[in-house]
Image 1 (tube, helix red, strand yellow):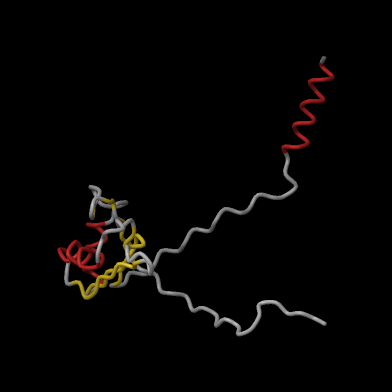
Image 2: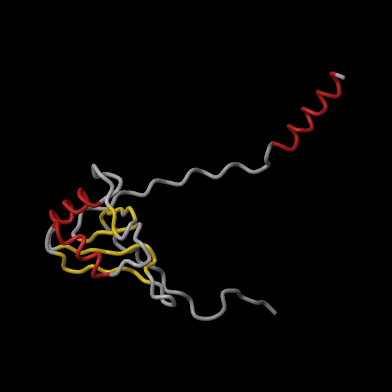
Length: 137
C-alpha cells in the first residue's frame, strides 16, 4: 500500500514539474516626467471630449481635451488626453482627479477615472515594404 502511494506521488511529481522556466515578472514601467499633458483612463464609452474638458477645467486652463474613439462605433475607447497651460495645473489635476491617489474616488459619467502624466511616444521603426518572409528557390 505504501509502495502504491509513493508511486502515485512520484507520478504526480513527474507531471507537475514544467520543463520550461517561468517567465520573468514584467518590469515596472518608469514614471513619466511631469509635463502639461495628462493621460486619463477609465472613461465611460459615452464620455465626450467636451465632457472631459469640463471635468478638468476646474484645475486650470485646459488647452485641449481629447477622448480617443473607436473608428467604427465612434464611442470612447476608455482613455483620453488633457493638455494644460502649465505643468503646475496638470499636477493639481492629477491630485484632484486621479482615483488612485485622491482622497475620494473621482467619477466621470459614472466611472472612476485615473489621471497621470502622459508618456512621450516612442519612435517606431518604419515598416518594411514587401513580404514579411523571404522565400528561397
